[in-house]
Image (cartoon, rainbow, N blue to C red; front, side, top):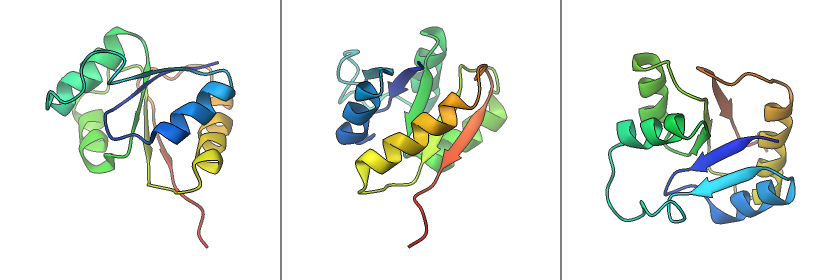
Length: 113
């Protein structure tokens, strides 16, 4: 399964569901980096150095960073979705479709109602 790094604003319930799907998810809190206002560039660098795909709701900034710094372990940008289990399942399905995430960016959007 995949190794993820969830940034500070990523929903904990999605993280818990991803873990139930056997993904290795490290949170900002668990890494000792919570509440420090770490710039997005450093968040991406940390995930890259630890060979983890970044999980974020901060789409605008990380799509820009992907363009500026395509050398990363992968980025998954999501829209907020209160269906946390459904969002985790969509991430899981998308991740399962690829084996090499280096330099890749994928968008996970909530389904249209």
